[in-house]
View 1 (spheres, rainbow, N blue to C red):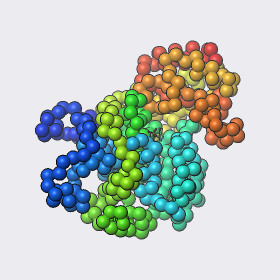
View 2: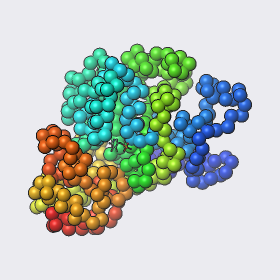
View 3: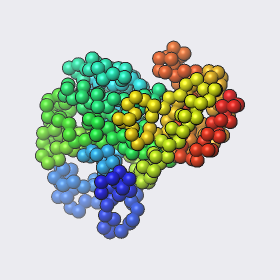
View 4: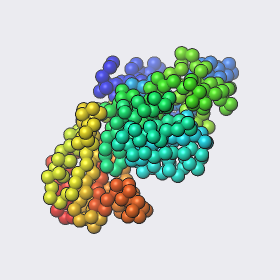
Length: 421
Ligand SMILES: *Cc1c(COP(=O)(O)O)cnc(C)c1O
């Protein structure tokens, strides 16, 4: 079983449940699991045997989700978490602590920017932001304290593509892993591990789940990064909260699982941002049709971008498929995100959003349905004009997350709203 479309439906659940023969992935709504004996219980706690203990740590439904996404990304292991936000947070605190630093692209999802700019520094982890357009900018910001490099596949809000390979080369030259948030691309369009990234994070809430029904996140590790060099003491030093295990050095055959196993046993176990089994199940349900949906999102996104470019009511249009790196990183399509600047500034932007009929006005992306938002009057309204400009939020900027409806209906809704604006 090697092709992505097939993995979307089968990976992690190749043979049906032994006891029930359930064809679809079962949803295990349980908090805990019975031990066979005190010896069995003791073995599970000391990792002599692997098995279920408590759903904060692991759950059979979430386990299938983890195996499936790891297979889709070509990774060694994955850990599902409560949200994309907690996935980003755990990906960092699993390798960096107070006194350490991270180098990150500056064009991030808003929530991640705030986490990096305001929350991590409060915990003693400094994040150095760089303009991601040139890998050399990452190099210049790396120092002795740096523990990882972070970027997203498609930047926010200008939708530029990130040169993952170029940035991975820089990170590796300094003995650092590259963490890539691939929420906007999904493994159906781009697999960062194939371009040198070491760790991939996703918000499952967006295109992976695909239906806007549940919140979730996931971290996938390639299993190839060398954590034994001493540069990452959190992984290589004995872990006082877990039997003094050195995850980098003591796992033997399980060494490729070091990063994900540590994330499960230290941050997840003790901070507790586990995914709800119901949300893991919803994400799995969505992933079954991921390849088909991304194909249609990409087809519709491209058509909307071209249509807007031809409108005299539009100043400019940005689409990831137009980026100079698109042929390298997005040969199979560039997804459904389109941003454009409407003529007439903030006033026209608000009117356009209000005039939309089929498009929903929501603070989300990656729903099967088409979504729109006017950042200047909503998500970024707390910023002053100067800060908005620095973040690339122009007054008439409209962000569309183009859905998988019929393209005729999508374009008709956009046209009537443009006419009213
Ligand atoms: C939505 C999003 C997140 C956060 O995910 P949640 O599931 O909403 O917590 C992180 N990164 C990107 C790129 C996103 O779009």
